[in-house]
Amino acid sequence: MYLFLCNLSIVDLCYTNITIPKLVHMFLSSDSSICFTQCFIQMYFFSFAVTTEDLLLFIMAYDRYVAICRPLRYHSVLSKKNCLLFMICVWVTGFINSILPPLTTFSIPLCYSNKVSQFFCEYKAFSKISCPNIGFHILAYTEAVIFGIFPFLFSIISYIKVIVVIFHIKSSDGRRKAFSTCSSHLIVLTMYYGTWMSAYLIPSLINTQVLELVFTLLYTTVTPMLNPLIYTVRNKDVKRALQKLVGCEVKDE
Image (cartoon, rainbow, N blue to C red):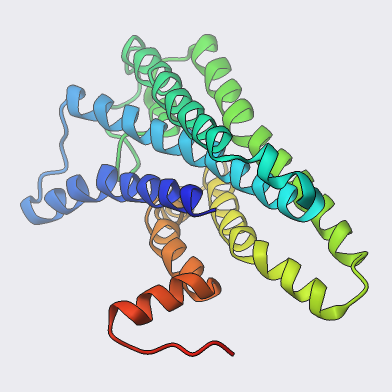
């Protein structure tokens, strides 16, 4: 679990470091321009962060599924070796898959404008100003389904099975302990996918730009900022470590 939390923290740091520094520079300098090279580099690393977090959240949901639904097989299915292999696959997939969006976008000319209606360079914003291209839209939808919708659906299926098992636990204390082991991740999963889907699947109606900016800001900045707080508040081991760090003595109940 802590290996997954460590990787999630790194991805969350990537989110903020990809988007916020350039945004702060624009505010301080009053210069909202960005060169093509910087734009596509930013798009690459943002696509990498999105892909990696989607896959990582699914792996964490699977981890909770095995821990609650298959507890006797947990140490064999999620051994240290298998967990490291999972993390290597997640990061490698993120790096490789993220090459496609900037390469595809770079080859498409801009027909409508050279102004991106977003506070950073990303796929959807470019689709609104680029020339019509069927291959571009097919790739965008394919990426969203494979690395967005599928991990989300698999995570939901895992938690449905987890909830079914929890309800079959006879003691209320057992149900509470089982649910507490996955409640933090379930909160993070709901926040992340709720804002992500709101930003990317919002209908193309009039005056949706403000909503898109708000939802994008939530899942790229606010959610990564809240993730450590959620896991800190909900995790006794983390709270105990923080209390020891500041010199407080912790007594077991």
